[in-house]
Image 1: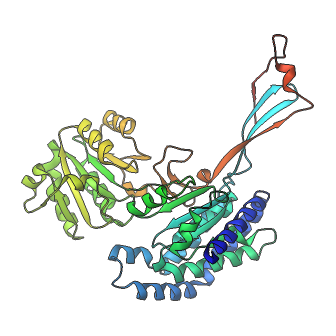
Image 2: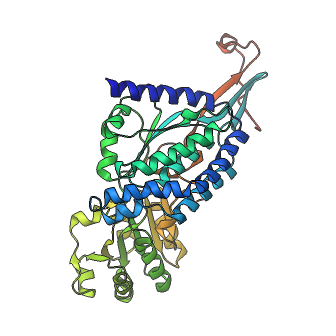
Image 3: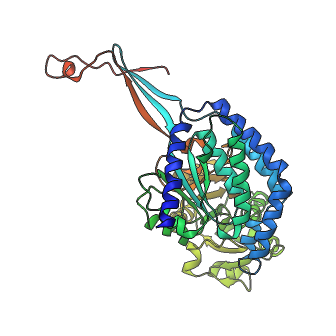
Amino acid sequence: MKLRHKVLEQCEKAREASIRLGSIDSEVKDVVLYELAEDILMNKERIIEANGIDLRSSEGKISSAMMKRLMVDDKKINEMAAMVRSVAKLEDPSGKVLQKTELDKGLILEKISVPIGVIACIFESRPEVVVQISALAIKSGNAVLLKGGKEAINTNKVLVDIIRKSILDNKGMPVDSVQLLETREEVKEVLKMDDFIDLIIPRGSNKFVKFIQGNTKIPVMGHADGICHVYVDKDADIEKAIRICFDSKCQYPAVCNAMETLLAHRSVAKRILPRLAKEYGREDVELRGDSAVRKILKGVKKATEKDWSTEYGDFVLSIKVVDDIDEAIGHINRYGSGHTDCIVTEKKLNALKFIDLVDSGSVMWNCSTRFSDGYRYGLGAEVGISTNKIHARGPVGLEGLVIYKYVLTGDGHIVSEYSGKKGKKFKHKRLKG
């Protein structure tokens, strides 16, 4: 009961904060964000010290990929501060008149963007996510409850403390706009708080996301898998393809927009696969291939049916040879997760066909899947990537954290005047906002 009461109190405070946030001027939010960027840099040693404790505690208990996600160094801290500033520079997405309609003289309907309200974001390993999501929540006017992995608890505590202090230093901003959940048991309680929380954004493994989706009535936005593909077409520029395929897999294999399956057209397979195998060998990438691949690359492990639908999150890559673009598209739509998929080709018609028929949140033409990211898309940062077909899809930044409401202004208008055969007629005239 004590635990439930604690979580309930946090949720109530978050709801109160979200209501107050709705009336905060954009200028105030921006001041908070610019000060937060400076506070992060000023507390660099404190953040790294806390992260060192987490790293030592996690050594030997989590994978090398997760250890890499967990580590915070000077470079990551500088990137956090830069990201916060980039969010501050963006236009406030709330309070915009999206549509204005004159129903009749003096009766005006406006569709206005508003914050979603209270968001719970549950994620694993990466402490910088605390800063990303907090910055986006502050800018868009949402209150947020954050729960990171237990392996990052000390780093997360310090970051949330810095964020809350930046909020406190500015009058009018409710400090409970950003709160930290610390235990798995608290998360289980949060999943029951559908009266207070408007949206849950989980970021983590397939198993983790599916657990969240299956244990709450609260809407969930995100993706369970990041099974991304690169298809090298028969009309591909081989040098471009090698660069793109290497970057898509090796630039950061632990993240959800890294390539997991490479599809090569039969006519280019013999030219590109040996060269790619050599490149991947420099990073000790384990290759798994179908029978056609194994005839070209001797000693490669056999790819199973399970491999085509597996997100490795590591230096492992499955490879398949396909007869044409239709087979590639069919494979992607069958085994992919709707996250990010790429075609490498110099033939525009093939690229347009791929873009039209691949059912993913992000589709690339002649560029790495790793570009599928809120910061790189110019969204400032992202709260996550959504493969849902709801109000937000792909990398979700500020625009994905607002919804809308209708505001109707009249002058004594009543519905009965518009009823019956002699009733007045609506104009439904679109006006400029």
